Image (cartoon, rainbow, N blue to C red; front, side, top):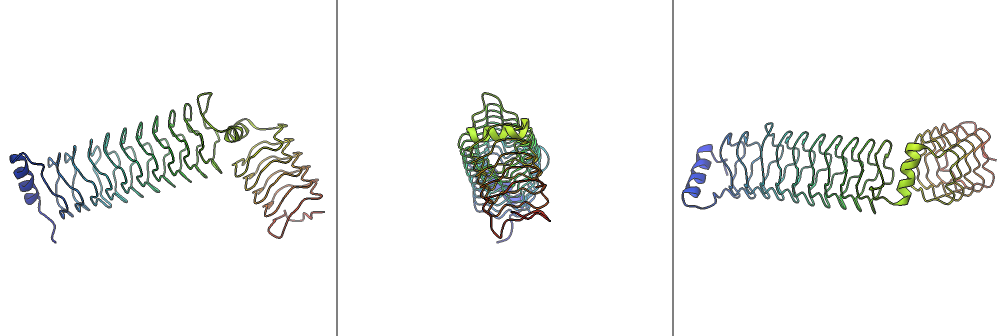
Amino acid sequence: MSSMSREQVLEIIQTGRENNERPDLSDANLCQTDLEQVDLSGVNFTWANLSGANLQRANLKRADLSGANLVEYSAAPDFEVLQANLEGADLEGANLSGAIATGANLQNANLNGANLMWANFGGTKMENASLRAANCRRTNFGEADLRHSDLSRANLQLAHLIAANLSRADLRAANLKDADLSRADLHYSVLFRASLHGANLIGADLTGANLRGADLNAARMDHTTRIEDKWLIVWQIVNFGAMGLDLEGRDLQRANLSKTNLNRANLSHADLRKADFFEADLSQAVLRRANLRGADMFRANLRGADLRGAELFGVNFSRADMEDADVRGAQFNSATKWPENFRPG
């Protein structure tokens, strides 16, 4: 079916409004149609094909775009979809930088790979939306409902997420560097290997959140931040060091402790499975009978460390300094990578 012309669209809209009916362009083929500056407020675009359409300076207030195809759509700056219904809309790869979508409904929408830089999604409904690898740098999601959304690998650097609801959201490997997450609800969210470097977490709820491998360096927290003890200790170690600290028996598995100061710390019997100790200072640390299965000790300082009886299966000690380290009674296997010229006794 060929694409509708601008004139045909205007006629349908005018007829609908003259009859006090909602203009109906559902299922319409509007691919490449020029709708610049057209008043499209309240129009029904459900399941319409708007890919490549020119909607610059068009008024889409309260328009229903649920299920519409806007793949690779490129919006003009300050493009407004205030209170529009975009539920289930396909906006994959769309350029919505600078768009104003406050109060819009984007539940179940596909925004994978979309450019949302500087856009305003304050107060939007985005439950179950998919924003994988989207560019959300400096985007405003203040008070937005992002429950169960997929933001994995999204760039949220400097994003405004104050009081946003991100409970059970997938934020694995997301870049949240310097993002404002104050008072955000992140309970049971997945922040596996996410960067929270410099993020504002004051008043945020991180109960039950998966912070394995997350970068908490320079992240801001206070007594109003709700977070499990394990991750609070990781945050303290990362930001204030743990020189000489007693961490015996602590569960720190999969913690990102790269470049931390653990000099002379007591980590005996600790669970350190798959923890990241890249370039960490563990000189003279006590790691007796600690479980280090799969840990990364690449370029770590282990001079004089006590690793007696520790489980070292699959540990990467490549380029680590293990001078005078004691590994007597430690368990290891062929997957354990030792520093060059180091021979376990």
